[in-house]
Image (cartoon, rainbow, N blue to C red; front, side, top):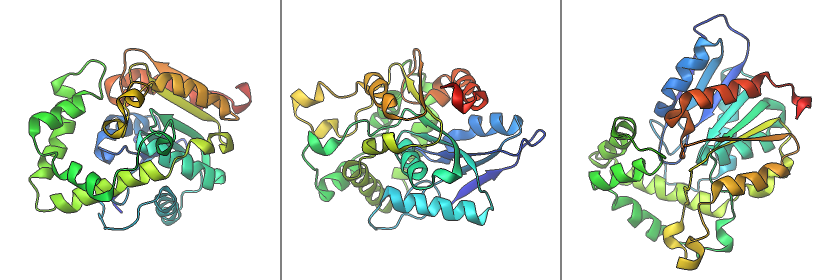
Length: 284
């Protein structure tokens, strides 16, 4: 399991931030977040979960529980007891499972545009493992990959989404591409089969749910009927409903922003996080 453990570059404040990446990313896309919060005195740990980035990509059954266990073992190895946990996209789903399983380890929880805002099993037929794998190995056209990443932004800028797309484009040219594609398909199976929306009401840490106003990311929409597809991607509205289930929850919507606020509107993301970290738990 690959990870970055970045020491504070200013006077240490004794707090540690842990970052969970999304499905089509790795720890590399947290670069500005890591630098900024290290400059504020935080220790920052960014993981590449098993199956992603520079970590191993085994052909195994993937589960959010197993990924959470891997992470807590890493934190034990690093002798980190209490964390501020930030999870983006699929990393938001994992962060929910981690915080529910290890509430004593999570000082604050920040969910940045988490996916899984509905139980996909209820409205979308289950795609087979082979269907998911074939869909992954066919994603080799550089232009289509760039389009995929541009869709994560409300105002796509090639200089911003281009480097993100380039990572996946280079993966398709690797001899390890089929291993990567299989792990990616298995991760989609995990997302489909293991909903976490039923765990929002069990989250005990103070929690910030952050959504880009124009985030319409809708996993598995291609497998949905046309009628169901029309109802998907209403993420801002779904977040407003779910946050009411969190005992100590707060919702922040970032205007004119898509799926990745920490890249598209970094300063807005940063200020929302800092305000939340300073906010006393009993004020919500």
